Image 1 (cartoon, rainbow, N blue to C red):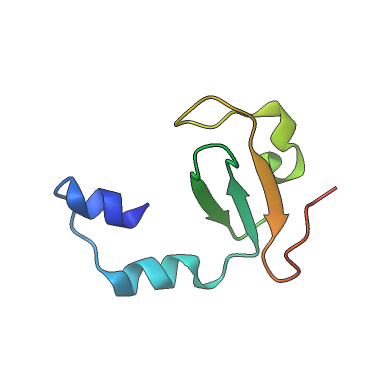
Image 2 (image 1 turned 90 degrees about the vertical axis):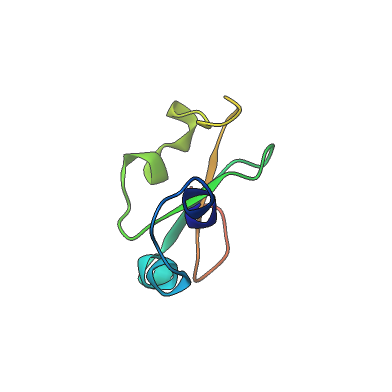
Length: 73
């Protein structure tokens, strides 16, 4: 995510990207195109990913807990 931002002229560093992901507990991702984002809290999109679509390709997204690596029910 941040690497694409930097390529488009945004100003950030690898250190800020690591800091942003450091406290994340959940990952929301698209199995079709590979888009992903992390969340620190169990937000609506983490609780009910079936209600949301991928912003890149429009397919269904999934969520998983990062520490355990298992899908959220």
